[in-house]
Image 1 (cartoon, rainbow, N blue to C red):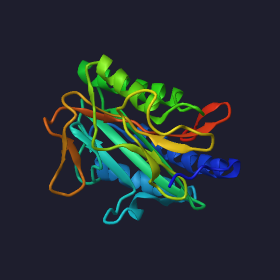
Image 2: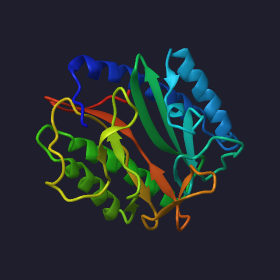
Image 3: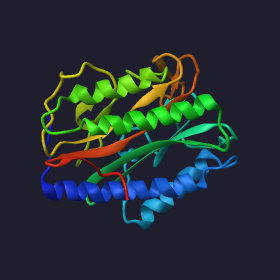
Length: 248
């Protein structure tokens, strides 16, 4: 069931998503060769706590961490631990919080030191696809107007989009309807309305769109083990157009 949000609820979601945006900025400043993904988890736990929020991802049954940290060929849901980041890696950090009963969710893929031209092109295309998708999140448009733009930006740059994982609605739950795929035909899908709050999260692969889950039961990787990048913003559809909530 799709739940449209009131102005007050949008403001509550703005506050929760501002927290997660602030935490991601702290994490981005800590990224460097030699830091472990577990170190990043510790920074996030501290940053969430000092802002009076709680980590959201432990509300997902079986998951016990504040972050998902996915490196190189890892697409999403990488488990923080002992892995050390190396110069030339790319790392996706996905963070969720709960503040006063409302969820925040934000992800970004960062370069570690100096990355290859291919990796830089992937990161640039991923960010561009997200921002172009957000432009389509307008009252009266169709859901797949967002999806098709994301897919087009990816394909124009020689990349594929992951099809097995999607964006989602968000509010008093981390994952609400509707699902927001990163591919689709323009002019189709749900009609967008003011008050809809959705998390857009393009996942772009250097190779094919195919992915698989590792034996840990969580970490999603590209099947061909080529690079992947993940970007996510929470967006409210308002009368004057889309508003990004996961910013400071």
